Amino acid sequence: MSFHKSDSRTPLAPAEYTKIPTVVSSGYDSEKTQGGRNNASIGQPKFIRSDMADVPVQQAAGSTLPLVITRKKGGGDSDDGNYNPFEHRKVEHPTSDLETFVHLLKGSLGSGILAMPMAFSHAGLWFGLVATFAVGTLCTYCVHVLVKCAHILCRRRKIPMMGFADVAEQAFLDGPPALNRWSRFIRFMVNTFLVLDLLGCCCIYLVFVATNVEQVVSVYLETVLSVRVWIMIVTVPLIFMCLVRNLKFLTPFSMIANILMFVGIVITFIYMFTDLPAPSERPGLVAVSEWPLFFGTVIFALEGIGVVMSLENDMRNPTHFIGCPSVLNFGMGLVIALYTLVGFFGFLKYGPDTEASITLNLPLDDKLAQSVKLMIAIAIFFTFTLQFYVPVSILWKGLEHKIRPERQNISEYGLRVALVVLCGGIAVALPNLGPFISLIGAVCLSTLGMIVPATIELAVYHEDPGYGRFNWRLWKNSGLILFGVIGFVAGTYVSIIEFHAEFSGGH
Image (cartoon, rainbow, N blue to C red; front, top):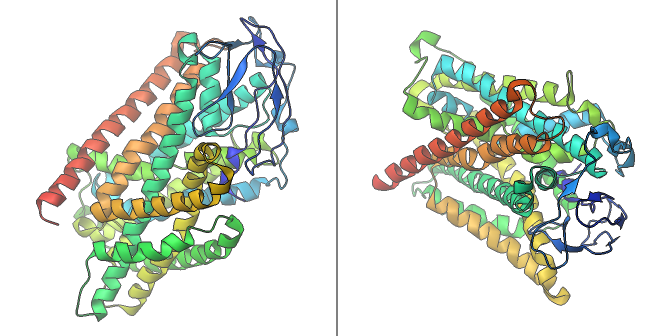
């Protein structure tokens, strides 16, 4: 199953316009993904394309603002012709609840789990325990909000399925008139932050691989190469691997990566649970000034909002994804428990000496520990190509129509090479793994994981069914947005201070 299927687009279905009553006829085919476009005909309005997207935005002739598409007043979502979007989905190989559960674990359990002990070092043993559960629950709730709003919008707009950017754009078109003109911008912003997040993860992967390889090689070589040199060395083979455009050819590497990662983490657990000190030897709470680094790291580790819509879109029973009990609750509950377990016992084991990745704390002179470092480094190396696939696909969709057909192949290869080199350059410039992880979590995932879902719900619920008694939805989402903004600003500031301290120290 591929996580990029959420890029499938469908035109807006027949709707009721406030200014120009007309009928849109459209065809839906979720399998047309090779640059094809779904056809639509319309009387007076014309279509323009959103940046980095395929979903057309409707405009009146001679106007620069989208038309406001409204539902009949006094009716709820059930008045939309009892349209069931799940019956209209065309998925070639729908996934069962169990398969979706496994994919959710795979999408959420990544290299971030290895950084959880470092996160606890910026929170304290007991505060980290409570705060990780709290932040994890908050992330899960925001995913629930996003998927629920997607279901509502699918019924209102008579669209079978939507990706993350689709939901954001349609919510703004469906929200207060003041938001309508920002629909294309919010779509562009979501796609941009997804690209930044995933490319940032690729940079982190490069630093992770280079740091672990440098540790092992330095044991056997008298001439020690710096982490920056190893980043450049690792980047070269990745350039060639990332030229592969078909995910089918990357599947064997994914399988190898999963096996190596699993074995490496199991052996790491053995080291971690050996000779544990008493909890009283570790601080239960640290200075508030360090909390933003904890927040950014935990958000980076736990937030899987970039893949949830594609998982839900591929399900045989999409209604089972949210609710209670649900695939989302079971999957994220297990992920939160595992991450908390690793963070708690990793920090308990290594205390103030905890590294940005728990593998870096393993003994250098131990052969088994060296094999673990190399196994996980190879696993992350192979995972780079899969992580790289999604941002390239998003960017290429925005550029493809601007390039002559005879130059598209060479242009796509050029884009791939340029992005890998860019990731390598950023990793060379910022080879400190800890602040890098916190920065990506604070900037991208606090925005995508909290601010955007809360804003989407405010737009979707603004008129029907409303914000509830005492405007509780308004207060709740305002709190989520405020929390996300504080995490964004504080996490970014502290990460930049950490980078500045590193450069000032001459590293």
